Amino acid sequence: MKVLVVGGAGYIGSHAVRALEESGHEAWVFDNLYQGHRGAVPADRLIEGDLLNPADLAAALDKSGAEAVMHFAALALVGESVTDPAKYYSNNVVGALNLLDAMREKGIWRIVFSSTCATYGVPPSSPIDESMPQVPINPYGDTKLAIEKALDAYSHAYGLGVAALRYFNAAGSHHSGEIGEDHDPETHLIPIVLQVALGQREHVTIFGDDYPTPDGTCIRDYIHVEDLCSAHVAALERLEQGQMMKLNLGTGNGFSVKQVIDACRKVTGHEIPAVMGERRPGDPAALVANSSKAFETLGWKPKYTSVEEVVASAWRWHQANPNGYAN
Ligand code: UFG
Image 1 (cartoon, rainbow, N blue to C red):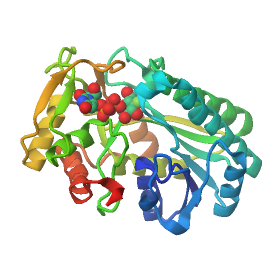
Image 2 (spheres, rainbow, N blue to C red):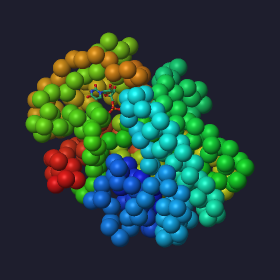
Image 3 (tube, helix red, strand yellow):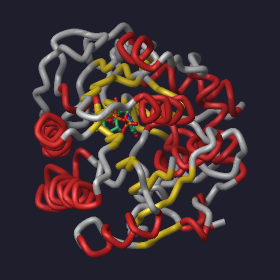
C-alpha cells in the first residue's frame, strides 16, 4: 500500500515509516519539521507542508498516490496544552479535520490515528481497558478525544476505516540505530535519565513520591516504539471500510519512576543522581494498559516486555547520538 505518514519525521512517525517499509509498503512523509527531523526520513520521500494549509495536504496526497494515511502530527506536551490551548486546538483539531477533508476529497478511506491514554484522564482503576470512561484532564487529551469522536462520526457517515490507537508511554529506538528519540524540549522520563548518564544534566528530578503506589512514584507502561509501530501496520492491513477500531497499545506491565531510573543505572553503568521534587500537575498515579483487545484484533504482541530492554534500546541511540539529529 502507498501510505502518507503525516508527522512522519517525528519520533514515532519515523519509526512507523521504517515499519511500513519493512512490511513491503511504500511510505511517504508529510511534515512541517516543527518537531520532526529531516535526518529521520529518506530525503526523496519527504513532502514538506503544513496541516493547516489544505493546499499542502492535497498536493501531498496527490504526489504520494496515498491509499492510506497514518496521522502522527500532533503537539503532545500536556503542560503546554494548559498554558497555550489555542495552539493545541488549532494543530491537533483543525489540522486533523483538514486532513480528513482532504482524504474524503481524494476518496482515501483508511486512517490510523495516534490517540493516547491521556483520553482516559484519571482512570477509575488500572490496568485500563477500552470500555473505561474517557474523561481527559487537560486540553491535550481533549483534542485527541475530539478527533476520536470525529473519526467515529465520519466512519459511520462516510465509510472511513479507522484505527484509533491509544498509546501508553512510547520509548526505545529503532534496532538499526539510525533513528531515535530527539525532542526539544525533552520532557520524557527515559531520555531525561539517559541525559544524566551522558553528563548532560546533573540529576533527574522525581516528580513526587507520595502517590498511592508501592514506592510512592508514578507507574507507567513503557511500550517499545517498534512494537507500537508494528501494531500500526497490523491495524492498517486489517482495516475495512466503515470500521472503527479503538485499541490500547501498551505492554500491560507497569514500572515506577524509581524502577525506570534503576533500570537506567543498570543498563548504563552510571550512578545517575536523582532528587525528589514536587508532583507535576496532571500526572495520574498509574497508567497501565490492558491491551488484550489489540492482541486479539491484530494478532499482535509486544516483543519487548522488560523495561531494561527498552532502556537498552534507547541508550544505544542516545550514546551514539548525544546531540540527537544535530550530530
Ligand atoms: N517524570 C519524572 N521526572 C522527569 C520526567 C518525568 O519524575 O523529569 C515522571 C512523570 O511525572 C511521570 C513519568 O515520569 O510520572 C513518565 O513521564 P513522561 O513525561 O515520560 O510521560 P507521561 O506519562 O507524562 O506522558 C505520556 C506521553 C504524553 C501523554 C501522557 C498521557 O508522553 O504524550 O503519557 O498521560 F499525554
